[in-house]
Every structure is written in structure tokens, then in C-alpha cells.
Image (cartoon, rainbow, N blue to C red; front, side, top):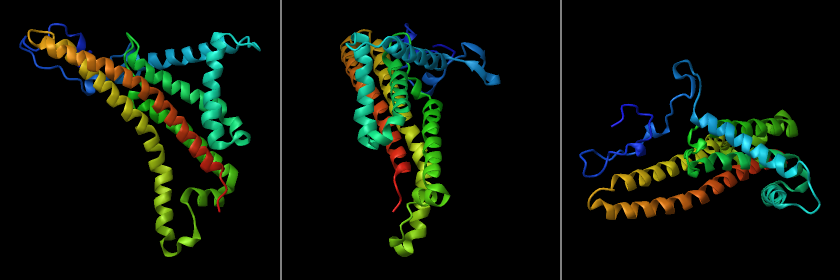
Length: 273
């Protein structure tokens, strides 16, 4: 067994079911990476998830730049794909949630968030990379904080201090004696629980999905010994099935993340009655 816990256990090619070693199950060590540059002890370093996040950003910017740098009335294949993706987010999420008049100004942000999250998720099934950046909780937290700051600042800018306070606390005088308790619950929910769940929902799904993919991938190799060949085939089929399922989940989580973003913006813009 490798002494370095940050190494991917699936590459330990001598470990099989009847070779005297235990199953190298994935765990938290599967989400730890040695610095590619710098020193982890000094908290100034650059590792694989950071590299994937940077490459993903470059790929997204490069794709849309190539698609729209010379737009044509009759679009080519690349422009057509880019327009279809952009229009899906604009009409299917932003306009449906915020309306065309209010939503148009937020389209660039929502489109950027969707494709960034989707690309960070997609790294999980791309050979060599094989790791979803959003399975590191710092990235979903950073994205959720962007939305959170936008939501809070927009709420105060649109309604003023008193109106924003009523908006965030769900003030409704018809609640009578339970109004203070209801306001406290809403305040806690909106200011603390909302950004937490926004980030954790994305993180937890990508973390769990990557763990399952690792589990079946490692098991397929681990069982390749003796009678274990029969079980290895089943595990390999499950790896393919989970990869296809993960493709769906990756797109779905990006969709849910920006849908919630639009819902929060809608709440900030809504008039309090």
C-alpha cells in the first residue's frame, strides 16, 4: 500500500481480492491533493482542483469568445451551440423566474454561474482530470457567497433598510402574537440557512457522486483476480451506469444552483405587502 494518503488508490495495481490486501476503499483521502506548486503548510500553494478550476474558466471563456467573436446572421455550428445554451438559461430560467424586463440585466451572471458550475462538475468524468472541483466545499461556498452578497445588497437597495428588514424577516402583522417568533425563524433561515444550503446542496451531490464512481472503479480493478472476474464485470457495468447518471446529475445541479439564484433575486425584487 502507498504510504502517501493523497495518492489515488485505484492506481495501486498489485492490490486484488485474493492477493492478501484489503479493499482500498475511497474516503476523505481521495479528496486531498499534494500541491503542484508551493507549500501546503504555508497555505500558499496551487493544487489539482485549483488547476482544474483555472482550466475550466479558460475553456468557458474561450468557447464563448470563439463562438461570438464574429457573430453571423446565419450562425455556424459553434455559434449555434453557444446561442442555444445561452438562450436556454436566459429564457428557461431567468425570464421564467424574473420576467424579461427585470431579468435581462442578470442574464450574464446567471449564464456565467451555470456554465462555470457545470464545467467544474464535468471534470469528474473527463479522463486524467477525473475530479469534480465542486466536491471541494470551498468552491460552492465562494459561489454561494457571490449570490448571497448580491441578494442582500439588492434587497436593501430596492427596499431601503426598513423594507429590506421586513422582506428578510417575512414581516406580516396578520400573524399576531406569533409574529416575533416567525420573524426570528425567517431571519435565521434567510441569513444563515439559505447560503449554507445553497452551497452544501451542490457540494454534497458532487462529493457523493465522485465517491460512488471511485468505489465502483476501484472495485472493478480490485476484483480482477480468480473467481472475482465475474464480480468485476458487474462492478464495471455499474461504473458505466454511474458515469451516465453522474452526467445527468452534473447538469441538474448546475441548473438547480442558478434556479435558486434567480429565486433569491426574485425575492429581493419582490414588493413586501
